[in-house]
Image (tube, rainbow, N blue to C red; front, side, top):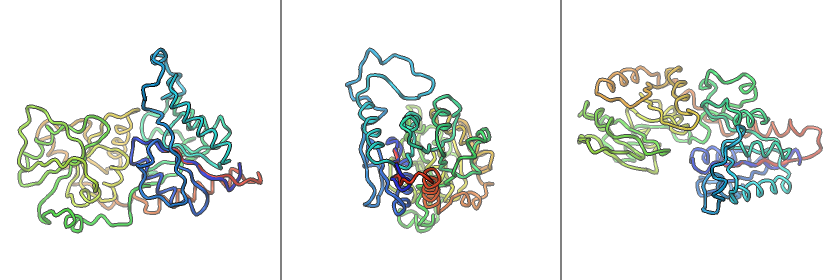
Length: 379
């Protein structure tokens, strides 16, 4: 391994936000050193510099039918989150990464996200950086990955750090607010409405439905839309309906769209859960904003919602409003939000600054070794 070696980056293939931030960092880093991206689904990456290597590995999380059923019910050690026994795909994926460690002699390995791969890198004597997330992360698995990491990369502003994050973790964290969010184009309401063919005068509430579960329930939305019939309500993403609904005429479900950024820019008000990418796109736009966190592992969204509430960046409800008056209270709070402060939390240079930090970290770690390692990124 050497100071100028490549960086490896593992990217979790279930989240497009993971791929977008990995791609933005890799594109900013490639002029400084080689980069290899590891992912089970390389097609999720946006445009990459031609010099970036993409290595496809089997999924660490999805069975393919060749697993050993007798070991399926065996318990997990506390230091891991997803390490089932008898999965040939996991064996193959870990072997590919370990072989790459030996062949490429990387300077650094980035995991976004996998506690197990972070620990693998440490056991293989390869320094690693873990992507830091909101949530209850004090369990042995996360702490084993975080403690063994040489640095942590947080894809959010330092102002959005949760209050209970230990100082020992904060002290080795680089905050990259909005990394992976396209900040090149301004979030212009009029231009976005022209692209979408929307009436420039019509007040618009946009509901961004999450994709991590069954979808957002539409019944609460019918209550909100019916309470203000002069306002157009539009949902994007997966919406779950119920038999007893009576949908109002001013509520329209668009389903999945390729241009959520345009819809956010075009909106007058926004309702959403608080996945990392959604949060930063809304902050970049600066809007009256109602947040209803969704269930996620380790209470990730509930912790992020608490931070948004603490900082006065969103009107937060821990559950969907069940009557029109509840919507009215939330909108009253949302209209008091300082849009300028929302926008100020987005760093347009976050990808470049993260790349500089990673490269500097490589230089520091390998100083005096006479070697020049590369960087690996696993997605």
